[in-house]
Length: 241
View 1: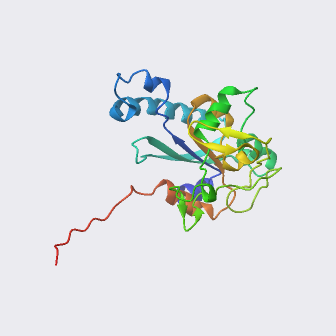
View 2: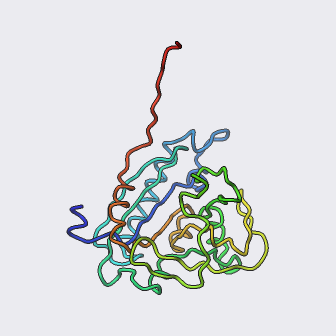
């Protein structure tokens, strides 16, 4: 909270997850082993990628940074990921939808004009499917997706005074969209896109979720989220009666 008092609320939330398919990792894994077998290689490559991302932020890719904090954790599969909160200078704060659209995209890019970005987005930035399409998905709780997917289609981005904006998600042509392991209705596929910054996704080829934070009430949630502890389980052993 001392950071918030001095610099203001976070403007950008960013989450980056290691990609075990990075060629820097795959090229060093001996035959017969996977990335899970060599956490030393994964950690070394991850640290280099994260350092490069932080340098991009400090050099103003999203705007002039007044302050940032980040926390590195590990997923249940062992892959490292980082949560980053960024406070921008007043002149770069994303208040208007035109600025938000320059920072964040929630649509699948054109495959013909940008095949590299298209592959990354369809491989790393697609949620689900869940809901009625897959009610047993891990993100489902009480019949609803805990992440709020599928998101509503929208012709234009709508900035909100609290929470996250409603990002532009336009309807696509009819057909079927196939990613690495999933299949979507192409017309509504943008409803499943996790918001991202095209520059970051194309450069780093991994899951990098970028969200604009527009509300003051998000401060408590975001700082609790990035500073939360590791998962815990309670085990009880009882004698038979």
